[in-house]
Length: 245
Image 1 (tube, helix red, strand yellow):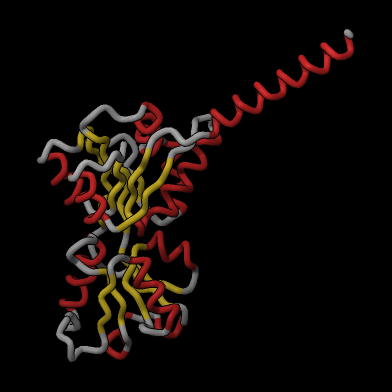
Image 2: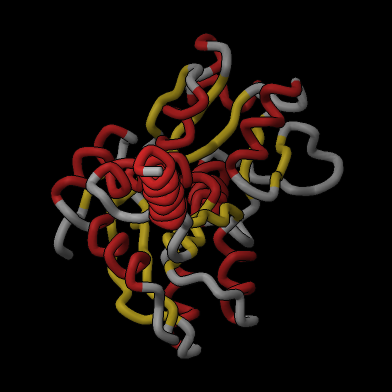
């Protein structure tokens, strides 16, 4: 009888422990992050959860569409954006609060072939670039290419391929539709290959919490993103961290 009771008690405790672990692993909070910097932010998230915090759910897309979804009521607790214009736009519309820069990112010329990765021969290459309408790196790419007299989006120009976001520009090169891509440095580090930093102003990565009450775990992650612990990870991905700003 005692043996039976002991077995039942152990089973109950094991089940309770399994339930507790499952509950602890359930995502708490939703982060919307620009696709081009998502890998870096997810890396910081791994350090956040390693410190004992619950995980968050990530939604990855170009900054413009993410901002428009938040404006329409999407339940994202935190936006981490590669384009600072969109968080400011949301704040002005009363949809985002507690805006801060996290880090500054750089535009690079990237290719799978090292010999293609030279700005001096860019006019001879088929270039993939994110569209300037929805991404900050697309705007930087537009400015840079225009300074080289290479920005011509007419249908007769087969040297320039515009994509919805930076990741799609990389995919265009991998598929053979383009030879080089203008993308964030963090994405170039993620996908390997060769790259050179272009002479363009760095872009601040800016984030903010939704104006309605945000999930407490997302609030903690927002603080962690601007901490000294996160700064080392930002640097590893080619950013200039802006801790405490």
